[in-house]
Image (tube, rainbow, N blue to C red):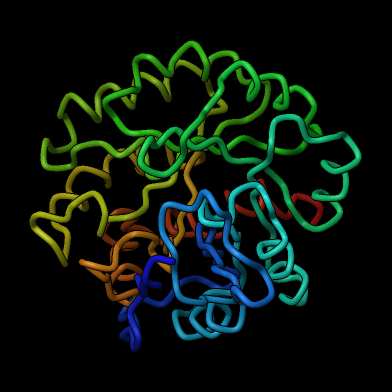
Length: 292
């Protein structure tokens, strides 16, 4: 058994930025607890427990009201840990599932009942062994009509992803903007290619998230990220949602301070109106539409 790893800050700072009332951390995860929710035998990393208690304590510390818990790859297609996080949240969490494409319609309905509102397709080769586009498309057509599809890929495969993305039958959310090289700046090749993808469909959304992953060389305070991403948020303000990415899977060698991650928000969304869209209006549309 590999050694278990910790990828999150033990004592994150209090952000200087205060999120608006009702703000949603729309991209975070839970790990385990392992004794109750074992990790997948195919997991590429074996984390320490980062359960709902830790997640909700962090939510309150950072000034957020709700969470969207995205199924982590270390749990494979068994969504029990994520469903548990939603169940114990007191209505303050919803989720995004990862499923075996052969999942039954009954099991999809059960995921919906448990608070899932989307599924995630992961194309990062270091995290998943197999990403069968044809089977993903088949299951995508069987999703509840108000669900969306989250996709995670890196910038170098954006061109080959385009036909698949174009064929997806639901609203699409791209994790971490498809991991562009932010050192190229707002007009770099990666950002231009990503804008072209956004322009190809009005229902492609994105998460302007993970400065710690995308601006690792320069590091905190992640100035390259702020410079490259702010124009994207301004130009597509109705199509972005934000999250901490806690507990920062695979970031154990460069663990970010979550308070500093929150302090990135006013740098990429400098006005109160942009912040309201990014943190409240847009994620509510996807995850709690019945409350709007």
